[in-house]
Amino acid sequence: MSPFKAYLIDQKDGKTVAGFTRFEEGRLDKGEVTLRIACSSVNYKDALAATGAGRIIRRYPCIGGIDMAGTVVSSSDPRFKEGDPVIATSYDIGVAHHGGYAEYGRVPADWVVPLPKGMSLFDAMALGTAGYTAALGIVRMEENGLKPENGKVIVSGATGGVGSIAIDILARLGYEVVALTGKESQTDYLKGLGAREVMLRASLDLSKIKPLDKALWAGAVDNLGGEVLAWMTSTMQQNGTIASIGLAASMSLNTSVAPFILRGASLLGIDSGYTAMPLRRRVWERLAGDMRPAHLAAMTRSVKLDDLPPVFESFIQGQAHGRVVVDCA
Ligand SMILES: NC(=O)c1ccc[n+]([C@@H]2O[C@H](COP(=O)([O-])OP(=O)(O)OC[C@H]3O[C@@H](n4cnc5c(N)ncnc54)[C@H](OP(=O)(O)O)[C@@H]3O)[C@@H](O)[C@H]2O)c1
Image: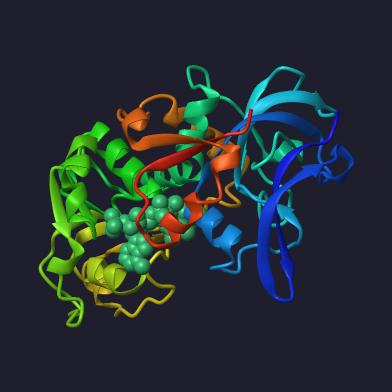
């Protein structure tokens, strides 16, 4: 294999530096499966890693991109053979193991998911870690008793990747979805994805969060953390379930035990990184089946690998909406 294009993130004098380079196959990390990457995607975590806005990279230098989808070039593991279409996301990819912003990748076979039937490589990356995590959160909420007849489900960070896909999947499954956003201008977009109602973050008084407030939600998907998650917790209905996914606003959570011990609310931690493989495959299969978002194309745009760097800043500013697929072919 001749040297190929890769977006390498490094650290110099304590500062993050990132840019394109020609990369040799021999420098790829160890793994049984080598793939020709067709597409990757941009997640909030990718933007934090590439810009250095967050301490995400655990091993420098590292090719960025926590997601990759492509075709197997070679595999020393019998579970995969040349030509198989596959997905690899999570684990150490793009943080401590060379990631998806390149023409080729190599990963351990235990990290590889066969592309579900009926799903294209492009759609797999339109979903990417964001879609996988949204679906994982909803699966965990259902396992904890969430059903459409229980009541409304609120989704924060609604216009983001996880938020957009969560709204779409929940609406498809028959839930009454309330989108909580900072972007009034995206009301039509959110309603188009299936949100029954759009609430503006600015309409909430987060300076006075009571231990228990009016019970509003059967379920909540939270991408922000901080005061929004604290408010959601205080407004859960009896036996409501919250999927805590993100920290786009804050790493903190200041709440009380009242919603848990007086309303039986459950706060579910959702970690996409190290889900056991049987559950991971089950979630990807559902993303190709009953959880397939109905508006994936409408929420996704595509950029060439060369045009990737300017995309990161909009994620850091909270201005991105929907999903960005990176065309690596
Ligand atoms: N647990 C896991 O395994 C896992 C996996 C994937 C992602 N995540 C986390 O989930 C979160 C969402 O990821 P994503 O890829 O969907 O990110 P994204 O596309 O950048 O979306 C984040 C959304 O949150 C809102 N937001 C951003 N900055 C904010 C701020 N400072 N204050 C309040 N709201 C803000 C914005 O939506 P509105 O303007 O509509 O409010 C933004 O579009 C991130 O924190 C990410 O790290 C966790």
